[in-house]
Amino acid sequence: MIEILVVDDHTLIRKGMKQILDDTGDMRVTGEAESGALAIRMAQENRYDVVLLDITMPDRNGIDVLRQLKFNQPHLPVLMLSMHPEEQYAVRSMKAGAAGYLSKQSAPTQLVTAIRQVASGKKYISSELAEQLADGLSQGYRELLHQTLSNREYQTLCLMASGKSLSEIAEAMSLSAKTVSVYRARLLEKMKLKNNAEAVRYAINNHLID
Image (cartoon, rainbow, N blue to C red):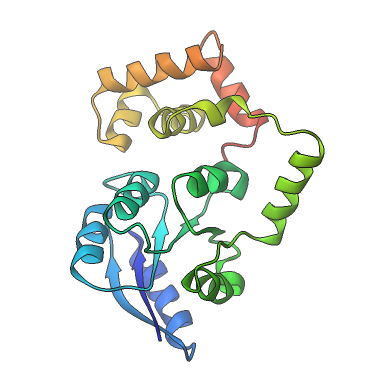
């Protein structure tokens, strides 16, 4: 039996995942967490075979939660779930230690397959993402500017591009406005952009926002 911890701040999504998985003969949801901090604590106190982790959490960015889970338990497979398109977070998640990445739109059809795969010690990526990666290799790999950013800088870029003000970004990231300003300055410097408008244009052109 594959025992699973589902981490998502939306109760309906957790219940939906639980229903899908509990209807599968070889899986059972034995834990639910609505925040990153609770997920980290539950993973330390209980045994799970797989963690399903949403990237967009209210208290901590999902990538940060992933890093902490992998630091505490390096062999625990973590499958990332997100409403964001794969090209936005998949590679970043895998680099941070995720065993796989699944968009919520495709989750119902691919979820069971993905869990079985990561529970057996393998990695999981969708056929669509595999094709994108293969295309990139065949054209000669070139790291995109946004892939050079830290997770906090990248999160700042995405929130800027979605139209949020400095204070709204600070609130969303649970940081001070001064700290967010530092991240903004760093990302503009790293990406060789002159101002916020250029950063927003870059994010739109590279499909970093829905």
